Image (tube, rainbow, N blue to C red):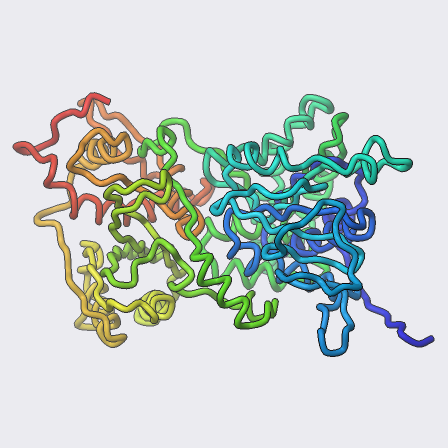
Amino acid sequence: MENFWEENISLNSFQISAMTFRAKIKSLIAGRGTGKSFITGAEIDENVRTMPRGITGVVQQTLGQALTKTLPSAFKYMEKAGYQKYNPKTKIGDYVICQKPPEHFYTPHEKIMSYEHMITFSNGHSLYLLSQIAGARGPNIDYTLSDEALTLDKVKFDQEAVPTNRGNEEQFGIHSPEPLFKHHGSTFTSSMGYLPEHKWLTDFAAYYEEEAGIQLFVVWNKIVNMQLQLIQAKMNNDEKTAVELWKECGRLRKTITPFVSKDGVLFMLSNAFDNIYNLGFSYLTRMYKVMDLVSFMIEILNFYINKVTDCYYALDDRHIYYKADNDDYIRGLAENNNFDWEELAKGRDCLWDADCDPNKPLEITPDWGTKISLIEVAQECTFDFVSGVITLCDNNINEFFVKPDENTDTMINALIDNFCLYYSKHKTKVVYYTVDTYGDIRLANSKKTYNQHAIDRLKRHKWNVRVRKHPGKEPPQNDKYLLWGYMLHETEPRLPKKRFNGARCKYTLISMNNTSVIQKNNGFFEKDKRSEKKTSVLPEEATHFGDAVDKRIWTKYGTILKKGSGFVNPRI
């Protein structure tokens, strides 16, 4: 038979369930390697087939996120399903990107004034790319789809995207001859949220306990902890323990079998174990070896993070997280590459970041440790990416970390090289290096300290290094606690507003949100660092990134509020 081909697509249980359950709203929270991109592609494919001339709104925080993350992965599946980008020379193809479709293509029922942000298929179904940064308002749509939904501003989504999810009831809805159940629904796929504002994604799971008495997240975290033990047992060649743990994980997994709520909501959790047939167990052991524990547990095993109650940092009081893709640059890059999905999916650099001023120095602070070594990257600016107003801000714009190996020199080189590669196009090659006093310890078999080795490495990459060091010993935890109180409550006009790039500084925020505070008998406050010593506590490296941020903040701003030998109580 001509024009016929066969494509083998292997699905895992998570993908099958997500595709086959009949639901109006889907919230699918899964770790890396589970096949979320396949589900996004499958949802697009289903919408194209079942809603010809309809519109699916692809809602992302930035256009760059849609063009470089969501769509390249989704269209890999679409191409396997037979979709081809339209070729104007051969006049063959199924879709066009961000341009007016050819005359023989059908157009959506909704009148479209501009195709600048649309991907149009030959049967008239279109994907409308909605950016929250630019304003997620557009034509009436029939369905919303959001990948990495934890980056969405939920308030904006409800105000802008939800009201547009209406119309076409005669074609697909309650007034049509054959109503489509998913019409005017939504699919959210995401990795696990790590901030209080991400809680709305896991709130969809409330029906498990309300309708079936299932404490989903309690059971899920038990499974994840056993899966970690299983990996460790396999690596230690303890097959008996590994088999017992595998069976117990399977038994517990059956107790949280996914189902659709009475209101048509489907919530599902998944991790790399669900895709082990395609990934192989070697993928899990390889990721365990190269990643630090907190990254592995959240990114791969999809551990549910529940913020500590008594937090050292008052992060809940104000919205201080933002996302800042340079959409104009990314859109230009996409057009120059003719929207080549493979090119758009390649790694990013500093030119993609709207919050990185190439004409200003960068500020970095290391934290050298036995379990994880890292640097935080910061920069002052006069624009608040959260409120959009002109004001002085101190922004954490990026983070880098490595898992140390036996060769400490190589670990330092890897960390600094990663930083230098990402910022190789940064115009002003000046970096303020806040010294980690632990890093003044001399390396084994070397005359250099950690800090000296890192600074020399920066200089080899042609960076001009300016060293900052706090005079004397480390300040009391209570003083740092009070300084953070001033900064985060924004009660001291001499201090800048503190902001974090929520997408680029993920583990910094996890660290700070999971750092407890202890009040001593003398009434002073102290950071609870016991989590660094307990392998049973997640995240294991709870305080390390926060320590790096502390060092720079204290060194740079600590003297502003100094009075005598301590701080004036901010009474907050």
